[in-house]
Structure formats: structure tokens, C-alpha cells
Length: 392
Image 1 (cartoon, rainbow, N blue to C red):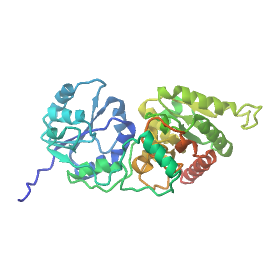
Image 2 (image 1 turned 180 degrees about the horizontal axis):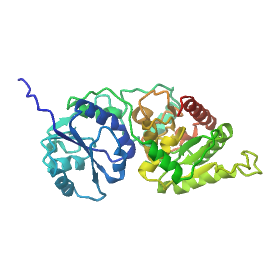
Image 3 (image 1 turned 180 degrees about the vertical axis):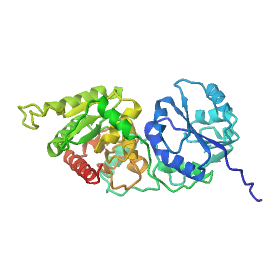
Image 4 (image 1 turned 45 degrees about the vertical axis):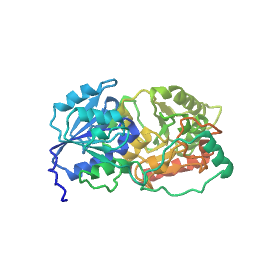
């Protein structure tokens, strides 16, 4: 039977994802959608905490925010005010599909599963090459560590990366599914406002380096704080950089500890840094920036040292080189930018139990503890130097 050709859409709703890193990884799909439908109005429905991420983005015309605690019926009523004829649902949750179904949008495209097939007009099967992200049990981890204490390093497989999860959905509307680098937009004025806001004035010989020691998912994704501090101190010795430390309010104690260690290293008695310098060596911004402020700050940095986290993805999407440390998660799945991008360096300990996808390590945290400080220092110094040569 000949398939019926569907008319091109006039107004597309994209139900956005709920986490910062995932939102950044969805930008290639939005860009491909814009490429396929340059004259069509594209609206993104997103949690309010992420709405500012889409400012100035070339793929988005309208942003509709979901307030925390807002009921599905209220969201649906808001969506009915617009004449959407297609909705693409990026999250895999039951709730996201319900919102769009209640709004009465004629075409509803999303992944099947989570008991939500009845809400979709075009349920899409999961990608055949998606990476298994099931959390490993303690018994499995003990078996892996006893039978094979280490695994060989390998190149990232670009076919596994999470950006393909969103690109595949857009292909059902006829968009190109070839990957693009995630992309966000920050204006020069925003960066200048950020520097003025925090009174950052640097001589030509002083560089801004970023440090992001937190990770919302849990402790298993976080390199030890003493290692971050030791690396930051040594990098400062080699480059004379100034550190900007990023994080949420939940990271306040962590970032305060690292800040104190770096500042203590500048004590005249230590001899590590020049005590005559009047420019602070570190600025702790954890919990002090808006989302747009975070974006501007990351854009201003020459390089970012970070765990696998939302700010890692933001920095890469803004063109800032990243040195990222992976333990319980997989760089194949959630690495910054596009896989094998030479602008970024992804470090792992190559232990047999990683990735386990657990929030807390049930054994000895070897996946993070075995990433050496000197290895991190060399990677950051190299990325910071290369970025300078390219005129960042």
C-alpha cells in the first residue's frame, strides 16, 4: 500500500528535556529541524530553570516555560492557545507524552515505552545501537573487578553518543540525522557584562581558566576535591592563570574548600605564588550566577576543568575547550561536543567496573581516584595553550 504523504508542518512544538546537559545535547537535533523547516515556527516547551538556555538560539522561535509543580492539564491548556500541528517529545517520560496528548496536537512523535504508546501517533522504536545504561549491581561490580582489574583504553564510538537519541526523532519529520556539534549562543555584550559584574580585569599575561568540581547526579561522578585543588595550584604555577570556580548552591561547601586550598597556596610562607600580586588567584562563583551568567562565564574561560556535568556540555557548546573526568559514566554516551573532538580531552582510569552508572561507589572509587593529578595538569595546560594560539 502506498504511504500517504503528510503535509509539511506549519508550527512545531518540541517538548524539551529536563536536565541541563541533556538540553545541550539536544541542540544538534533542533538545528537539524530548523535546517529542514527554515520558515516554520519552532517552539520549545522547557522547564523554567532551563528557559534562558535558549536565548539567541537560531533553532528556536518561541520558548514556553514549565513552572515547577505545574500540572499537566495547565500545560496542555497553555499549548492549546497555539495551533501546533506537530509535536516532537524528547523526554522518555510518561508525563511528557501526556502533556502533548492533552493539548490535542494532531501528530505526536516520541520514543515508545513507559506505558505511553497510546499518547503517540508515531511511536519510535529505540535506537538499535544505544548504549546500555542499566546500573550495575554490587555483585556484578565485584565480579568485574576480581576477574579483570583493568580494561584497555579505546576511542569513543560516535554512534553511541546521546545526541543521536534526539536526532533520530527529528529524522521522522524528514530532518537530516547526521550529527552536528552542540551549539549555544552567548553575545559579546553578555561576556563583557559578566566581567564587569565580577570586576574581572586581567593583564594580557593573565588567563581565565574555569573549574567545575561538582556534578548533580551524585558523588560517583566527582573527582576528589583535594585532587582538584592540587591540580589547580600546579596549573596556576605553570600558566599564571586566574581560576573561576563554577557550581550550584549545593556545591558551596565543596567549592569553598577548593578555594581555600588555592588561596592558601598563595601564602607568602609557601612560596608557591607571587605574594605581591593584587589580583585574586581564584573567584568562587558557586551559587552566584544565573544560567545566562554561567554561560557567559564559561565563554570567557580559556579552558574548563570539570567532571561529567551540565556545565561541561555548556562550555563545549560555547566553543570553550574542556578537560573532563569520567568515572561512573561513559564518555561514549555523554562526552562533551562531538566524539573525538580534538579541542577536548576526556580522561578515564579505564577500570573494569566503569561505567556502572551508580550515584555512589559501592567499593573503593577507583574509577576517579586513579586519574592522576599530573595527567590532568598536563591536559589543562595543553588545552589552555592551544586555545590561546587559536585566538580565543
